[in-house]
Image 1: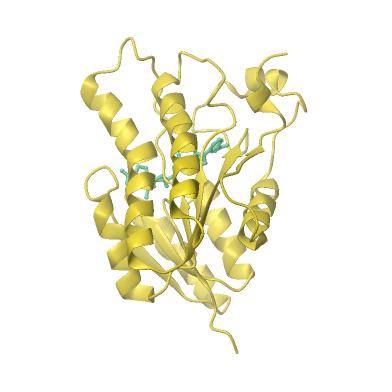
Image 2 (image 1 turned 90 degrees about the vertical axis):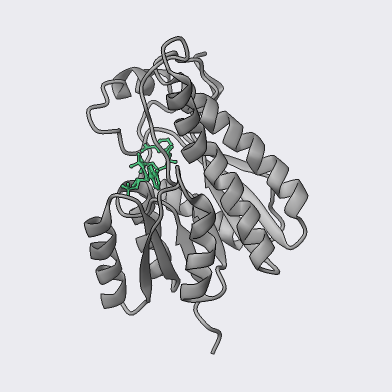
Length: 237
Ligand SMILES: NC(=O)c1ccc[n+]([C@@H]2O[C@H](COP(=O)([O-])OP(=O)(O)OC[C@H]3O[C@@H](n4cnc5c(N)ncnc54)[C@H](OP(=O)(O)O)[C@@H]3O)[C@@H](O)[C@H]2O)c1
């Protein structure tokens, strides 16, 4: 029998990351659950996955400080990593008029540089693999309130295409750009965004998991940004 496949999902202690992890475990994957501060949530998720008959390992790394540690730690724990999902992110409110250099660098480190460096280490450590970066369908629409977050996600889209060209043919690199799936804590923008969304509805985790499964199983697809966002990326029409 073929060994079960293994996925590493960054920031998978809760919300979108944990839902993708649970979904993949239901498809037969073992999981590396990466977290920074959500230790309890990560361990609870690992417990559920183990109870369902798959293996799950929790690894803590602060991606703003030591992103280079994650892949070697995970490789030592599980061996081959069949899928790397760069999901971890921060979502700070504010315009580039007011952010300090330190704040800007921190967002770029976590949202853009960490996926780039994780991809680099992953590709160096294995002969083949699959990377899925999580961007944002709303990133390209001007909005001063989340400006540096948007910039970091647009950069991640560009990184995705660059990685896809550079790392082919043995690695595929794609992105999923969600729309409104789970509002951030205290987020008041959702209603306005829903009106700007062509399909005028929220998405669900099932929509994201379908895209994930499609990208995993599509050996002829690389360099794609899949907008799972009800058309939000097309902006206000
Ligand atoms: N929620 C949505 O509807 C939506 C819409 C569009 C795009 N997205 C994208 O989808 C992804 C997941 O969204 P989400 O709302 O579930 O994200 P989230 O809850 O805001 O963050 C996901 C994880 O990122 C991790 N993280 C943050 N800073 C970190 C650091 N310094 N080091 C390591 N990990 C760090 C956190 O881990 P700890 O909790 O362990 O600290 C957190 O669990 C993100 O990339 C987001 O941009 C989401």
